[in-house]
Length: 608
Image 1 (cartoon, rainbow, N blue to C red):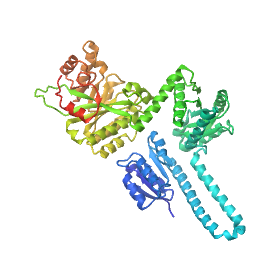
Image 2: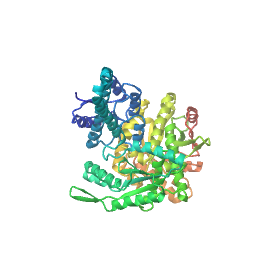
Image 3: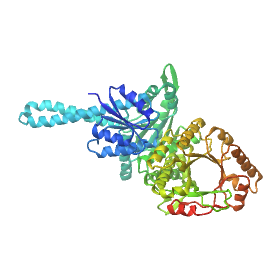
Image 4: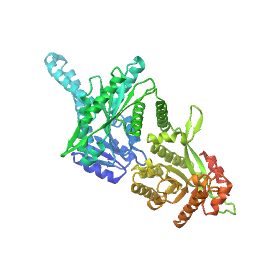
């Protein structure tokens, strides 16, 4: 019988691609465009495999997977997550996913991963059938044990083979046949326990290939897979039976070495580096030199998790490349720099926990109108949502300057931005009576967040989930040279604008190619960087910069917001040159977002 594959995705283009690819495997393809629809189909007509999108309106992919795993009938149903975000991969495995496919969708990757799971499913069903058959035969042939003994031994061996095969597939990477991330996680847990209990020395080596992306993109993913296999074999030839070798993912490998000294780990790293210096990858009559960067992290009493070890290795690699591309670098807890490293790593772990346990808080600051209001009318309020971190150990609120550098360093800003979007919308949903008192709430988006391909779909799904009008949200984009692709950023902002949200260019004037951004990016308002506002009374250049921005904005018919308005004299000066809105301590100090806060702010007459 043809195997049934259920494709769950709310994007028609993704469904079409996956349907075409899976159909080539002689599978019947079922389709669901939401998590709710998927659960209904699975209950009525269970498929053999599910390709599950992560971000969907309503029930997302993680919740669908969780519900399926809680149902005994679908607990073993193979699930492959489809995602464009690296952060979703570990979460997908934690809720019970069997594998993942990255976006944008690659046909060869889909075929390989689907075939891998279908093979696993086939083996599992064969093993279950054999188990049932064996149990029946044992009952039927009890009286003929002597005659049937040889046959039973053969069948038991076959069952053991299948169990071993299933275990192998669960613990090994299907490209390189090395141990995979799950097996590495389990081995590191055992190694940490051995070090904590018996002080058994060990070192963790992370190996990054330097030119994998070049080869993979220029020669194709088949060449990339072949490169990974050859590199895996090259590294394996340097190891002993006591070294645990795994592919973490992408172009990264890892070794857990139980050699007796750190010097032995250094020697191993130099041996691997030497092997790669003499290695060239041959493909399609081309030759590529493939270098490696190696980070060494000795196990110590402060290491207690797999994630922490990976963050430490990543920090070592980052610092090595930042300091000039040192090929082999070792984490040394006795150096002054290590104190900084530990602080960064601790911050990274705190931020991961803060996202998991909702330790962030939303503060708001009112944006005050500078227009004349002779009648003293109470107009709907504009405000900016500001992220803060609650430090439970000291019962205090931490400002972004204390944790955002670490968030940016470890690429956690997109997750924080999404947390803000989700929880601002949750607040608005829970307090519908306040909607008439709010004109808009601004939320900051980092350049990293803006680079995520599914951002617009995520915003749309959150708005739909909480039944909110898009006009309530203003997304502030800090102008920065970190935009990798200005055209891509402009297209993303245009898509967000089409949802009905507004776009504001934040910190205008202090970044890279400021005025060029006015031409390249779609926007609804300009927010002038406070560095020009604070001293514009006394520094003529600052005053002229502000005035020129206001003049240009007027010609574009765009309103202007001024930040860091800290004195009445500044507010009066801004009003005189045509600035529409002011934000700063002169008007309002940031405070925790609550219904009482909104009620009070809406009753304050806006005056300069």
